[in-house]
Length: 469
Image (cartoon, rainbow, N blue to C red; front, side, top):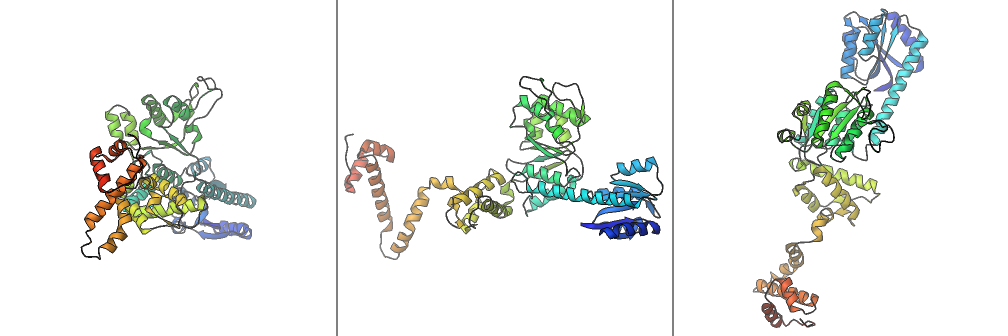
């Protein structure tokens, strides 16, 4: 939206002339339409609209409602020749930014318009800053799979509807990111997003965290403190690990949801709460209801709109996209030289089942970016723990491949006996020397009889420093 364009919807030519004469010298570009129908077609692209309340083809209040529904960020200043208290109240209730009565003072119009554009600039800057400082996590949810496109559509459907949403999915699938996306696309986007993990706070303290407390309400309450509900006023309260809420606290949360009011611990005062609640869980709440750990009435409160996040193994086409995104983040964050994944690494990423989902992928990629010494990140850099204890099969394949390739060109090379004997001789030699000739200890490590070990040592003529057994 341009910051100097204004849409004027008014059928009074004198008003159009006055508005243009007052605002165009200030650098504003005015487009004028004289009916609701024409105004509707011109709405897009304007951050400020001057709207007459009475128009030839309808009521401006009806158009105001439509504007606020389709373009919630657009500011609307109502102007009318029919100034009545009811009209002003209705206009403000429906979301009008301000209300001017005809004939209006030109200076007042200039002041109100200037203030409106200042507010628009401040909101944009707040949005920019909020998106920039998102706990170091990506603001956008990445994905091109059908499963994630379905999630994106569901976010779009529920974001502007001020209802409770339940987000379900395995740990690490990005439930908080979805909650933030809903908040950032809602009418509450300029107000706080407050998250609380119900599993990470002891149940005795969680009530105080949610509702706040008065000084002296309990041992250790040295000062008054507001809770998360008050901190999120006007915005969104995200309850992560919802299933871990204590059953008694569930009753108090239900009461707050039903009545939109609560009392801090130790207070008789009732406080109105204005928050949108989004819950998240990696458990089946219906099963929790059956086993008695989650209240049925609270379950039905949350079971209205549910968004289920797919595990990473069910959206494999997103793995490479996510991995490269996390790699770019790591390079910037840790000031690393440019890096990419080898073909073997990409294949390993794709074939792995990711029990820890996107969070596990992010952690492994960032660690690999730091540990890898080459510009190409290999499988061993990503799955570091797995390669610390390399399998015997991988070890032998790596060591024998070139040897076998050469020997296979020789007829009657007797590869089987040669390789088996040499491997066994090397194994026995290493173990017997590591145990300093202690055949009893060596036989236990090898898992063979001591007499068998002794015969093989003689057969292979293995020299070792013998010690007393």
